[in-house]
Length: 376
Image (cartoon, rainbow, N blue to C red):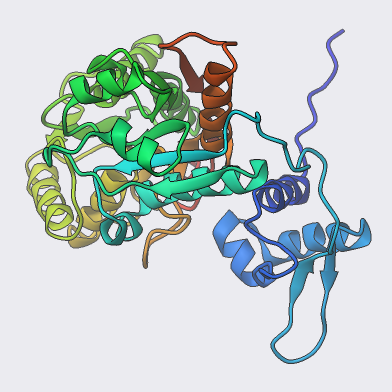
């Protein structure tokens, strides 16, 4: 007889999330853990759940509470949670050069790309590897490999540099290891680490169906890139397996490259018009957090509430809580996994343990937020 599955208590999930953050040096003896009410909002749990997780970590000696005005909860000096021990990097790797389609100011303003950069930064710190943000932009004629050499880098890491010269990066790969964050392999034969978009979209769509929604629409880009194509394919397959026709359930808006501000307003306005002409069912799967947030804004303008009237789920990390909106339900990879796998791939190539090109797909799971609800 099969054993009965027991759900992991929520406070244990919060505790694990906190230990992962401590391991990634998001919190430390100098950087305080946020108050329990803030953690509760970030993680989508009750304040009492966050409080219990904090109390257990204090009892285990990982966290320490410092009383008094201006103090708070910190990581105990010298305490390291399981799995969070510092890693000694390969001796061949002393510094990594990072290039990005955005300059530093725009990189900080972009929530998705900034999170990616912070993951790499934390993992470099954990391994004792230097990091150099290189001053190269698509189309400026600079050789990224030469810049990396001048900065004393033994490897080159590319964060969403899909607009530019893949041939230049392929040439750079002949001179030093090059790894890319994202599915860049459709443009050049380079090593990459990316989220498993197909699996994530499947999980998010199945989550909405399992909540009891009879139909799940999708919001996608007009122009289909690899990530968009993978996510749409998984959505269609999940509906097909459930015996649901996808005809009439796809909404396409926006351009291939999304910026900030004006593009968001354009997409939201386009969705308002699309939803007026063809009202969506009770559930929407959005390509990413950007489109999920735009869809929720469109619902507000049309007098529909999320999740009371329409549940929304997406793929990928956007905001832990999107501006003034609810925390999104999303399929996500483990916090810190991207930075960890990128650095490991670099070390493996330097040591000759893996040949180039090599690819790593990060598994994803649905993290429930405040934008989905079970159908009564």
